[in-house]
Length: 443
Image (tube, rainbow, N blue to C red; front, side, top):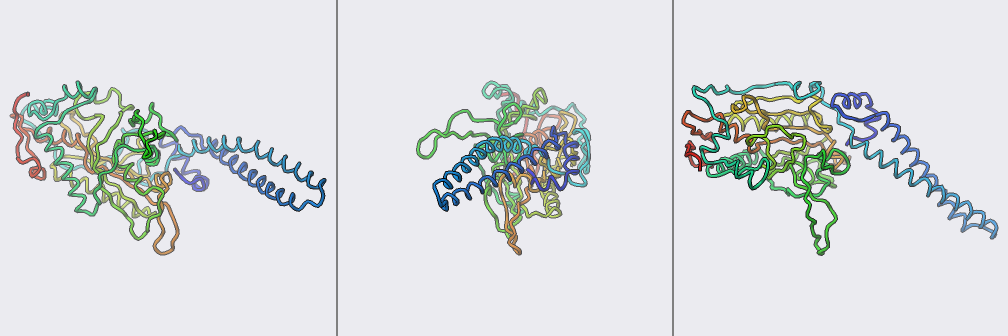
C-alpha cells in the first residue's frame, strides 16, 4: 500500500505503473474519492467542534429561553453529524478498497512488458547436459529409483498429491538443511514460522488481492474448521495456510517500531507451503513441477528506507541463491521480471530458473522481490532512525533460497546416467549418505 500523499505527488509515475502492470484501477476515480473523503472529514471535524461549542454555550446560558435556543441548535448539529457519518463511512470504505489496488512504482531498470514473454534474461550459468541416451523425466526416474510415488499420492492426497520416499526424502531434507546452514553462515537468522496464520499477514504481504480473502482469485487455502480461543470460546477469526514463509516472517514485527541501528535484519524461514494454484488450472498437470504442498527455505530482509541499500541487499539475496544453484551443479539462468509479470506491490524482481531436461526448458526455482515500504505500510512496521529518531516505514525484501520439489526435479533430470542412476551433488552427499542413487525398479 502506498501513502496517499505519495500518490498525489507522483501521479504520473502511478499512472505508468497501473498501465504497465495491467492493473484495473481508475486513478482519477480514486483521487476524486480521496477528495470527497477529505471534504467529509473536514465537515465532520467542524460539526464536532461546533457540538463541543454548543455544550459550553449551554452551561453559559443566562436564561431558559437562551438555553432552549442553544439546545435547538445543538440538535440541528447532531442531525447534521448523523447524516454525514454514514456518507463518510461509505466513502471511506470505497477509498480503502481502491487504495489496496494501487501498485507500487517500479525501478528504473525494470523492463516494460506485457507478460512473462518479455522478461529479460540477464545471466546464464552452466552447460545444459547432452545425453548419449534417451533421458528420462523425473516421473520415470522417481518411479525407477523408488523415491517418488505419484499414483498413491493422488489416491491419498488428490490431484497433485505425491509421496517422496527412501533416498528422495534424504535428498529433499538435505536440500532444506543445506540451505539453512548456508544462510545461517551468511548471517541470516534461521526460523520455523507458523504456517497456519490469521488473515492480516497475508493481506499485509500482498497475498490477498483486495481487503479481504477472495477464494476465487487468491491462491490461498482457507481452513474451514473453527479454532478456539484461550478461554475456550469459538474463534471468529479466519485462518489460512501460507504458501511461503514470507508472510509469517514479515508479520513477526507487525505493529512495532524497530531500532534503526539494528537494520537490516536478515531472516531465513523453513516452512511447509500450501498453494491452491487457482490461476494455474490445466498447467503442468503431470509430475511434481506444480503441486499444492511443498517445502521451502525463504529469505526475508527488513531494511531501512534506502533504495540503493535495498537494491544491494536484493543482489546479495539473489547471489546466495545463485551460489547454491552452482554448488548443486545445476545449469540455470537469472531473469529480470518485466512490469506485466510483476504483482502490484513489487518494485524490482528477479527469478532464477534451473534447466529441466524433462520439459526441455528452464523452470522457475526461485523469485526475489523488493517491495520498498509497500508491505510495511500494510503491516505497520517502522523503525526509528538511529541519528534523528525519525520514524519511517521499513523496506521489505524476500527471496526463495531453495524450494522443493523443483530443485529435486532439476537434480534428478540433470544428473541421470544411461542406467537410470542419479549422481548426488557433492554438497548433498553428507545428508544422503551416498554419491549415487541407484535404480531399483518399481516398488
